Image 1: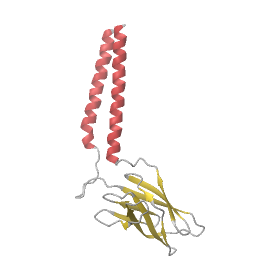
Image 2: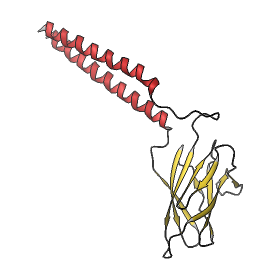
Image 3: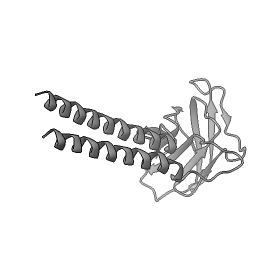
Image 4: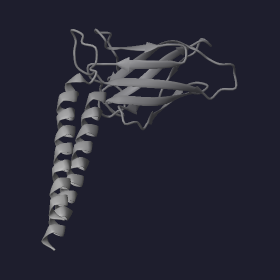
Length: 185
């Protein structure tokens, strides 16, 4: 019986060593972001538009994202285009990337009906923020969507790997504890 338990312990120990070795050797081979001169993750904002109008479908012609430090946006200034930092819009959505966003924002979008609508003041929702923008008759309403985008993708991978390692360590510790406990009886 003891020989069988020792054999099982050796097998689990060997399997753990193999899994740990594969993890340590495999991490450097995970795909990384394309390397540019301007490296490092940058916060982003993704705006998805939905229409609250009876009229036909509106399309986006252009947009400006205003950055504010004051909660009333009295100090608003347009997001500057510097390298990758900018607001880009297509017919149905807008995306922003920056070296760092201010705490408060306001959107101003020009639509195909000739109107320029301004949004309510909204706060940054996270590192990779997602928002739903409702197009009303005279204005825009911006609401943050929950997403796990608070962390950059690389950080999410590292957190997942750490959780897997911790779970594996707990299982192995429990197995060793139970084996040792059964040997004492």
